[in-house]
Image (cartoon, rainbow, N blue to C red; front, side):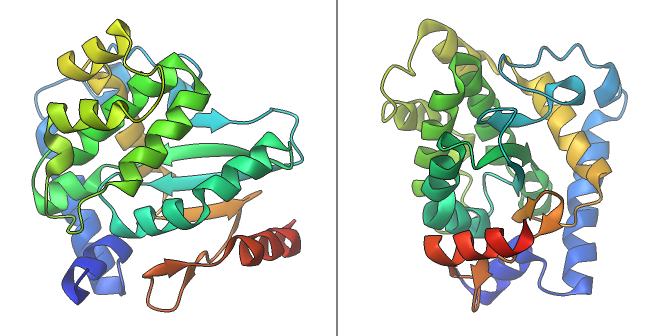
Length: 239
């Protein structure tokens, strides 16, 4: 990742944040001009989602000790750094009922950089969670593990690529999953999820919070995450 691409993903300074968020929001508003507002779209949320309009994808038990909130954009390279470095740790802690994960998604990079990869990847993630939370987790892992090196590369805009990556998740390629990816079944839901991000007040991705308290999970220049042990220590201090 070069410095310019890192600025897009991370919003390195106030000016960059304003520029990229404005570009993302402007694209979003432009796309929905003359159409029903996101809240009015007939958006069938995938099964196993939660929150208003089903815009949150949870993983773990509702009675877990803590809630880990994670905001991601499928094209964001910093999000890939977090997921590749800590995604398995998040899941392990959720499986132990130490915490429950609540995933929130943004798609602003489609507007900022051009393309449709963020939204089409999120549609496919919706199809995966409709199958099961476990398949969603495995598919998210596959997507971020194989994210293009440059977020300007709109590889996730390809249905063939999204289906090929789904082959890495045992049992995911059901007829219902394939149909939802090919026919963009969950795009109205994607619009709702995108709208929820803009309304959340978050300024970029990735964002990781434990019980509402931000955790800095990127180290140094952002090309690596903190280690699983460091994350566990951070989480302990924040709890």
